[in-house]
Each structure stands twice: as structure tokens, then as C-alpha cells.
Image (cartoon, rainbow, N blue to C red):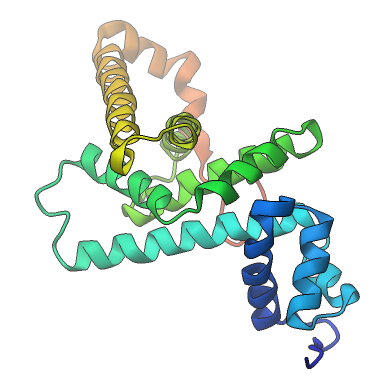
Amino acid sequence: MTETFASPGESDPSAAERLLEAACAHVPFDGWSETTLRAAAEEVGISPALARALYPRGAVDLALAYHRAGDAEMARLFAEEAAAGAHEALRYSEKVARAVQLRLEIADKELVRRGAALFSLPQHASDGAGAVWGSADAIWNALGDTSDDINWYSKRATLSGVYGAVVLFWLGDDSLGHQASWEFLDRRIGDVMRFEKVKGQVLASPLGKLLEKGPLSVLRRVRAPQRGSDLPGHQKA
């Protein structure tokens, strides 16, 4: 098998993709681990040094790459469905549910289960939370969300909670076609919609308007993070 090299200072996406694909076949047996990384590198003819350069933190970066690939595939398929008119009769909440469902339908349950075990470790908990947030962000972007204020954060925070809960339910769901998971998803989104309705009523009340002009006025300065920046957000000067 031919060795693969990357030019100095450049990444080799094809090598990274081949390594990840090979690793996925080993994860059900060895988890997201150094054993999996070494076996995958040997299988595709990539040196340990290059494998480490492509995935510096080894198993953690492999698992995150798999997760991000799933987010990207969900966005692609959701866009295809939208272009074909499959979402025209759906309410907005149903579109959110469809995106979450699609994200799970394309995932391998055993690979996700192994990832959940990895990210449950204290040293990787922040990576796991970031992955869930990334999925929520990908879903809102697929839906065409254009919010650029505090709502950018609240939408993703709320959906992260829903998504995380549904994933845990889905991992233990053995119902036909995961129907129980989709019903659970609908209930969680229904809870969110009821919360949003109450929140809207509170903010529209005299007290809510008073709070918006007073203590909550600072929230109007919050803006979504700039794309291409790793900053969590910024304030409008």
C-alpha cells in the first residue's frame, strides 16, 4: 500500500477522509481510541506521524470529525428535500423536527454510542457539549436562520437541550423505525414552542416592556459570533 504524505504546512483532506472512513469500521470493536486510529492508519497506508498531524488529539478529533461530517450531510440532504418541495406543507416547528430526525437517521447508532461514552469523560465533556452545539447551529443554518442578536444564542441553546435529550432517548430506542424517538422529539419541540409562546406573552406585557427598557436592555447589544472567528460573540459598540 502506498504511503500518503502532506506538503509542509498543508492538510490533505483526502487522507483525512480516508482515515476517518477506515476508523469507522473499527469503532464498534475498539471505540474512538488510539487503537482505532493506529489500525485505520495502517489499513489505508498512512504513517502514524501523518495520522497524528491530521488528528492531533487522536480519538477525540476522529470522533469530532465524524460528528461534523454528519452535520454537513444533514444540511446537504435537508437542502435537497427543501429544493424538491418536501417541506412546503410543514410548519416551522415541523421543519426543525425534520432536520433533527434527518440528522439521526444518517448516523450510525453504535458509533454515536461510542462517542457518547467518550464525551461523557470529564476531560472531553466540553468537546461533547461543543459537538451538540455545532449540530444545533447546523440545523438552524439549514433552516435559514438569520438571527444576529441574543436570539442566535437562545435558539441554539434551546435546540441543544432538545437535541441532546433526543439523542439519549434514540440510543436506547428499539421501536420500529425509531418511531418512539420521533414522538419524543415532537413532545420536546412542543414544550419549547409553549415556552416561546409564554415568553412572548411576558415580553409583550407592561412588566416585560419595562424590563426590556431596564435590566434587559443590555441584551440588545449582544451579537452572534462573526463567521470565521473563534470568538464566542461580540458586543455592538
